[in-house]
Image (cartoon, one colour):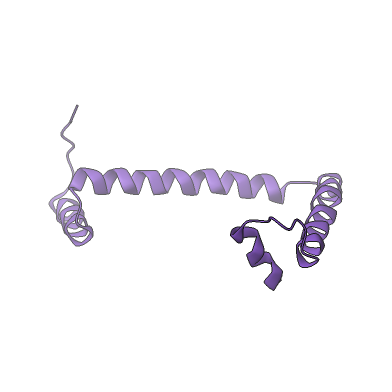
Length: 94
């Protein structure tokens, strides 16, 4: 389904120009712009939630995250497991 929207001539030219540069239709450009805008809005909400987290949250986060990460890196450096796939072998450089 399609619809017609009314925009100024300047905006129409900008949309068409940017769509042409990216090799997409005007509709695809608008969709991409809306997707990016909505993603930024979601990420801002995530950022607000993190900024609002109290010390209890961060203490619990560290208690779960740091030891696991440290143990994993140590284990990989020691060569465990021997059948580790190539994507994990890259961690040896840490």
